[in-house]
Image 1 (cartoon, rainbow, N blue to C red):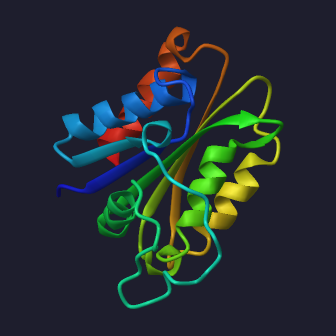
Image 2: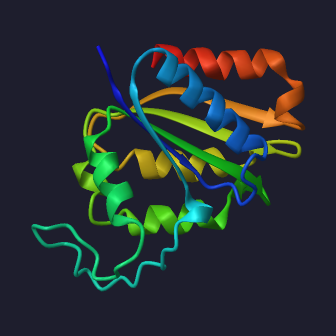
Length: 171
């Protein structure tokens, strides 16, 4: 069965370690004939949430006209969502947190999704998974399928690359 997969990379370095793992996941999911879309948040101009609650209308649209409307729509349609972040000071990067804040109009509309988390770190994830898992927990019936963490250079870790590829293939 073809699944709709969305991969959200928050790495400021396109082609960096967490982004490299995203690409392997995408490659595996495409090889399994899934419908896949990847977004790199660094390539999307978007503003911070203003906490105005204007998005809590039946249209679920933010008043800010920026690049996130399409991403949020794809998240609601998806069967599988992958969040990827480098770890800064033992937490997710600010770009991913700012993105999560902008998911306010849809967080309670995400239902029955499978989630994968990809991180890259210098030494450990610290508390990063807590924040990401907290966000995921707002959805209805979420299933965390796997967490992948790369420490050091992703391209020099073929076993990890293979594991992430296979997760994408089997998602």
